[in-house]
Image (cartoon, rainbow, N blue to C red; front, side, top):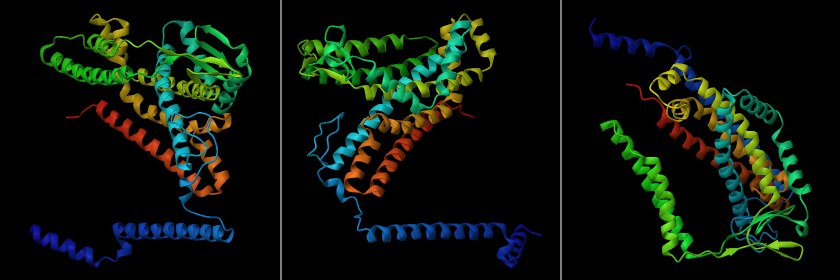
Length: 398
């Protein structure tokens, strides 16, 4: 039988089979039924919610975000007053959450990597200390850790008039940690631009150095040159701009300090609690990733004369990253989502600001929806970036 006749016979046979005996057609029907059930249930819940809101005369929609907020926010990255809108108040909460998440992730990765490497150290004392750190912090709920650090900063430190003054212009009390900052000057904007230029130049220099080494075998001190550019270019911009040195130092006015920069107890407790808790899990991720690499890699590196530090940074960790990145992504997401516990210690994050907004406007559904959408967006962006980075580090099969 020819190929055409065979295909025709198969087509005739498939047409003669009832759809309930065809697995592919049954699957389509099942999926259509499931989708219909979900849509029907969703519509029912929406209709019931709308009816209940109308019966209780509760307004719906997001028009409230354009109204005056009428409350103050104690800590903000941008200017805010009670006369600003709810939209700006929510923006302050989003930026505060983002600040904690970004700084926390950076510190967690650094600390977790150090503790994870120390856990595998041949030094018995160092290894035991790292193991104790991991076991203790992993098994204490993060909310209790936040309460502990908040009580340490808020209840154990002196009042402003009895502030600790370890260095000139630096003060520590139960209102926070005060320290001097430079007086605003155009030089600092130029220094920032110079730093960005130095970082971009360092990236291209590193790529050129790696390609040069692959082609010729000759190494180039890219790290040293990059460090020199990162330090030198901002300093040159600072010198060209007139070498400004004026500082805005904190000083006691009445019952509190004014001027300088303030790190509040709420922010410090939240950041420290999240970093310590999450870094214990990251340390275990790093330890597992390193142990997943064959010991033969270490022996081969040592046999060619590499020092232990170079073996770790050049051979082991780059390979371990392929194992570390997926679970590390989960820990980064956990830290971001756990930042919502800031409301328990009074830090004005998104959840805290949204709760105040809900209490004043009565629009709980919209307020909770904003919280969910923002955290979903943060999580998706983090996952997308880490998945992209994971693909870059993955082995390319031929």
